[in-house]
Image 1: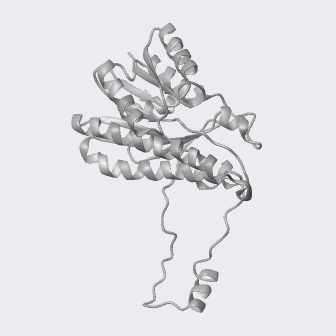
Image 2 (image 1 turned 30 degrees about the vertical axis):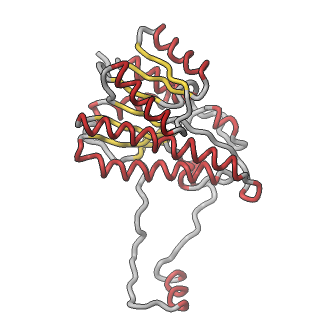
Amino acid sequence: MGFLDGRAVVITGAGRGLGRAFARHAAENGAAVVVNDVDGEPARETVAAIVADGGTAVASVGSVADAGYARSLISLCCNRFGSLDGLVNNAAVGYHAPPWDDDAERARALVETNVLGPLHCGTAAAEVMCARGRGVIVNVTSGSMIGQRGAAAYSASKGAVASMTYSWAADLAEHGVRVNAVSPIAWTRLMAADPKGNRDAPPPERVAPLVTYLLSDLSADVTGQVLRLADGHLHAVRQPAIIRPVLHRETWTVAEIAAAVGGELALESPPRDRWTL
């Protein structure tokens, strides 16, 4: 028996890399998988690989940045497999550029895929899952969310995905729907395009068990979490929080603020390589 027997899941950006690994692992564990990708050939190749291994899958080609398509993607899973038990928001694009060389249109396209894509798919899935009283959403964020040099747009988009995760988890818990995120490191096209990419990063297949775990009943008590799997190291990522101490005055002058920041608050600049973990 597989951990996902009888489940039906949608995995976006599953034609290559992490998405393909997630889709194949989910299928190996009994899930029927809707394989989404913006490119048709890779999506069909993933489906063919799943079917060759004895699994069940169907391809759906389109951009999750299109809200109408995202809704149809969720409907496809319900209509083809009779249910929607899980959604993995994996589709993403990325690029590297210093702030002074960033391009508005390229940034817009990234945000539409990396932020609006998960938002469109997640809201459509939430509607179905809440009506059924169960379901799991797994978002894919990145260590870049705490700030990667030369990748401000990508970092911002992954920070948005983490915030989406926390918000949805709070909204959907009472409806029986869990929402978590994974923050993986693996050798993918995005990693290969990074001038400072880790050439020794593990293959995407190493990360896939974490996604299957979050889709399964083994994580029934886990929601609102970001779990990171990087080079064999598994850990949770702390949510943003207020740094103590919290100082209070009825009114603050400029000089008092300067004294507090340089004194009791004891702020430190973050290390430049903090995102590399």
